[in-house]
Length: 351
Image 1: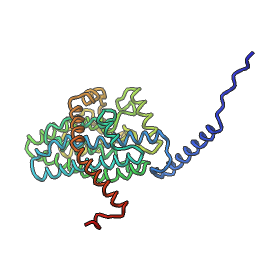
Image 2 (image 1 turned 90 degrees about the vertical axis):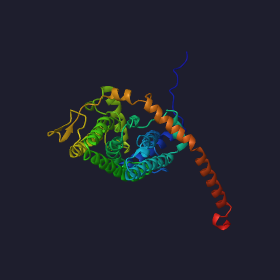
Image 3 (image 1 turned 30 degrees about the vertical axis):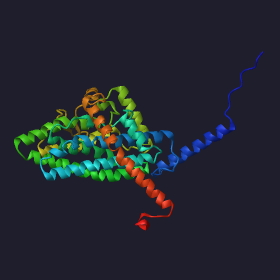
Image 4 (image 1 turned 30 degrees about the horizontal axis):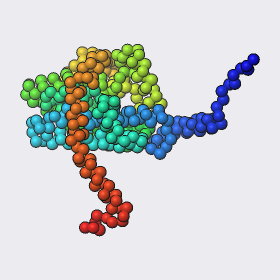
């Protein structure tokens, strides 16, 4: 008669590894509890690293894809002043992408890998930018509303738990605040212009308001925000984990509410009507109520399979391929400089 099978036991090596993992996890959580930042050489859980890479990559991709709606108007700006302002803004967005790709690289990924994943459709960007910019007023609406939503969403990231990301965001948010003012100034000029100009401003707001409210803050993480139970539960779980790790400080729906509260008085000062009949002040809550977001509508209208989405990605791939010679020349120059440094011969000495 065979005896009962022996119970499986962990080897001493596995036990030591588990104890070490538990100790490192406890030290990591203590670091977060003390409000200290996590730096690249610090130990971090794999889940923390993966969440950061996904979030920073999506953020960086959104910055460089987000250049396209406004960039298309650079040659059609109505004055040299407006053109120079818009050019500076588009250049800022490119710089934001570079800051963020650099922050992502401190987590052990290469920006070339991130860009390749974007080009293959394996990583995402904010679908807000799949909305076409049809008129000059759209450049103002994008800066005022979309960048305004970005500031609300990203200002807390200046204090996110990962040091390189937090430091990049401080620079990004400073510049985004100027973009919002630029957009508001442009919309104000249109609203104070001819009736046709004000109508153009109102039309742009009608088209950009809900994409900003819906898509700049991510999916709902409460059912009260219009998400179905399954979507809200998934969003809430992700938000809880991100908040526990100090990556985020607020839920998506808290930030969405903050954005609405911020924009309604500004729209009133401009004399524009936000396209949501549900907007009204709620004295009891101390916030503006607003209508539920039709998430299925936006997934269909601005999804990856739409014409504008395919166009955005095709332009990004073409720009990347057209710029290959610049990257190769820069890499060759850097290699030659590095070789000169290692041999002790500087370019100044040769000259």
